[in-house]
Length: 222
Image 1 (cartoon, rainbow, N blue to C red):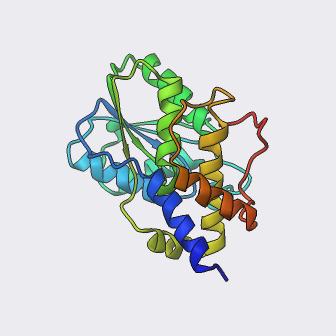
Image 2 (image 1 turned 60 degrees about the vertical axis):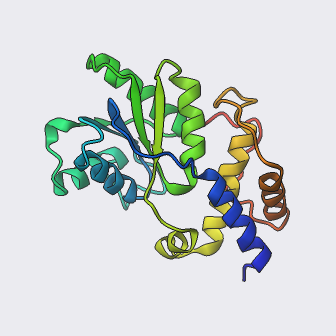
């Protein structure tokens, strides 16, 4: 049972993770691979709105995703996009990235290899990882003029319903928040100001045992 206070704290972390960017035309969209096909769907929707001429889907397979996405996250995203009407020529696949830092670095390398000029990027992630994706991208690809963050528009209760495990979602929110605070020291992301009430919400949830997605502070992956 999750208390009313824990839900309020989780909502505060959820709200903070949302960057609140308005979609606008960009050079390319980068869809970050994960368990969530909603990332592919949202990227496709933005493509059909004319926001980008080209999509990069990035992500390998993983131990936890082998059964669900045996061909790798990026490849499953590509297949989903084609089902939804995106032409194959408008999709590039980066199949090797295993964390957010690699998503950004490998996508950048792929686009440079293809001689695609990039001045702006529409960065599509899971809803609770917008801010960390942004902080990682700003650190690792600083010559991009602007980043526009996007995710599937949904509320925290709707996301919990889609996952089917409320405690896991709160654990993921706590993990995402911890990374925002730890990773700048490890030079994985840019530093961002964390409001006091967000820190308090994070600490309260952590101290109440929502810790399954925390990383050691000497973690070597972004």
